[in-house]
Length: 348
Image 1 (cartoon, rainbow, N blue to C red):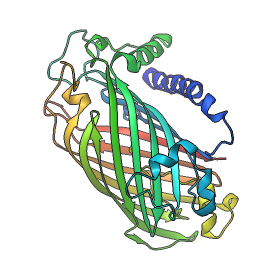
Image 2 (image 1 turned 45 degrees about the vertical axis):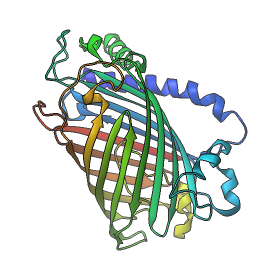
Image 3 (image 1 turned 180 degrees about the vertical axis):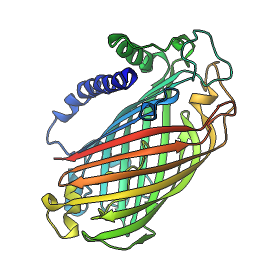
C-alpha cells in the first residue's frame, strides 16, 4: 500500500513540473486547447513493483478544426502539420496536442546496489511531445514528435526515491547503475480506422477499430499493428481507448456536437478489448544507451499487449480503467507483466 501512495505522490510532483513548464505558454494570447487528459500506468494495481513500474503523461489537445476554424490551431504548429504526410490536407479536420510525461523502469531486484547483469537496466525517460492529428471518412492519422532525456537528468531516480523516503517506504537501491544521460528524439506515426460500427446513437452498439503504425528514433524502433473492440451504450464517435501511445484518442467534447445532441447530454458506458503487437528493432530501456556504453540485456523482438477495460463518459468528462497484459520484453525476464492504466479526460 505504501508503494501505491508513493506513486500517487510521484504524479503530484510531475503535475507541479507540468504547471511550471506550461504556464508561460498558456499565458500568451487565446488558449487554443480545450481538453486535458491525464494517463497513469502502474504495476502496483496488481501488486508488483518491477520492469515498467510507472508511466505518467499529461496531454493538452485542441478540437478538430477545418475551413475558417483551422486558424485557431496554435501558430507554431501550422508549418509542421502542413509538412507531415497524411495530416497535411487543410480541407480535413485537424487537431494538435502537447504532452509531457515520464516512464520509469527498474529490475525485479531493487534491494541490490550491484549491477544485475541478467535483469533490465534502471532507466527513466522524461519527455515533451507535440502531436498532429487529422480525421476524415472514418480514418484518423496521427504523428507525434518527441524530445526527451534518459538517465540521471530524467530525475526518475530523484522523484521515486524522494517520495519513497517521505513516506518511509523502501527505496530502490540500484539507481547508480541506471542508463547514462542521453538526449532522445523520436517520430511516431499511427493510423486508426473504423472497420465496422453497429450503432451511432445512445443505445447498445459495438465497433471494431484497427490501428497500424511505427516509431523511429533512439527511444524505440518498431512497427506495430492491432485492433480494439468496443461494446456498450452510447459509444462516442471517436477512436477508442489506448494506453500511453502516440495516436491515443484526442477528441474533445466540442467535437461531438456533430452527433446531433448537445454536449451536456453526452453519456456512455462501454467495455473494450484490445491487442497490439510490435516487431521491435531497438528499445533503449533494454538495449542500453545508443551513444555510450551501458548495461543492456537481450531483448525479445516480438512483444504483444492485450488490454481489457471499462470506459465511462458523462458530459465533458471521460474516465477509463484497464488492465494490460504484456509479454516478456527480454529473454531473461522471468514472467510476463500485468499493469493497470487509468485515463481521465476533461473538456472545458
